[in-house]
Length: 413
Image (cartoon, rainbow, N blue to C red):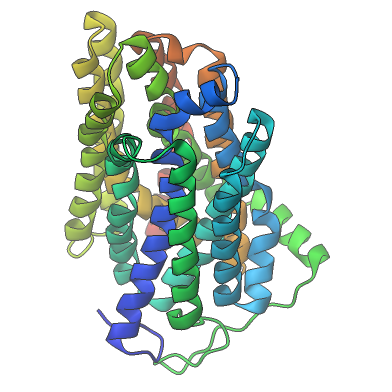
C-alpha cells in the first residue's frame, strides 16, 4: 500500500497508527468512563439522568466547532489543527480530575467532545488525501477496527480499572495518553496540503474567508446527494450510540448486572461492528463500492427488524444483543463506503465538506440519542429496541434516494 505523499512506508504506517490512536482515545474518553458514570453522579450528588446527558454533551461538543475547524484546516493545513485538537483534549481530560459538581463535569465533557470534530474534519480528510481511493476506504475500515477497540474493550477495561483507580484517575490516565499522542502527531504526521505528491499534483491550501465558507456551507445544504448521505450517516448510528449511552441504565441499574457483566455484554455488539469492517476490507479489494454498500444494507436493516421482533416477543437481553450484533455488522460493512460517497459528493475543499458532514451527522446522532433518553428508551429492553429501530429506520428514505441518484449518474456516464 503506497501513500500518494513522498514519505517512507514506515512514516505512512506511523501516521496511520497515530490517527488511530487519537481516534481511539477520543472514544475511550467516553466508553471507558461509562461504567463509572453511576459513581460519578453519586459522587457529585447528581440525578441518574445525567448518565446519558454527559454522553450527549460529548457528542454535541463534536459538532460545535466543526464549521470553523474545517476551513482552518483547509487554510493552515491538517497537521497543526490535529495537533491542537489532541492538546486540547488532553488538557480537558486532566481538568476533569478536579470536577466538583455535575455542571462543570458536563461542561468538560462538552469540551472533550470537541476532539470528535478534529477526528472527523481533519484526520479523516488527511487520510483520504494521503492514499488512493480504494486504499483509503480499506485503511478507514482497518483504522475503524482499531478505534472500535474502545467500545469493545473500553467498558470492560473501565470496570477493571475502577477496581484500582477512582473515576478521576481514569480521566488522568486518558489525559496523559492523549498528551503522548499529541507529541507523536507533532513529530511524525505529514502535511497533505501544499506538498507535491508522487504523481506531481499538489493540493493547494484554501484562503480563510468566512463569507466564502458560509457560501460553501449553503451550497452543501442544497447538494441533495451530500445531504442524503449526511442524514443517513447520523440516523444509522443512533442504535449503536444509544446503546453506549443507555446500557449502564439498562443493564446495571435495570437488570442489576455488575460492571464486568455490563462490559462483557458489549463484546458481541462491537465484535459485530469489527467483523463488518474486516469484511469491508476484503470486499473492497474485489467489488465495486456501490455494491458493497447495497450488500451492507441487508444485515443492517435485517438486524434492526430482528432486534425489534425478538426483543418484543421475549423481552430477553440475548434477543436484543443478537439483533444489535447483526445490525452492527451491517453498519461496519457500509459506514466507510457511505462516508466516502458523501465526502466526494461535492468538489469543495474536503475540510469544509467534512465539517458540514460531521456537523449534520453528529447533530442528528446527538439529538437522536437525547430523544431516546427523553422518550424513556432507558426504562427497559423493549422500549430501547422500539425507539432505536425507529431512529435508524428513518435513514431508509435518504439512503434509497442517494443510491437511486448514483445509479442514474453511473448510467449517464
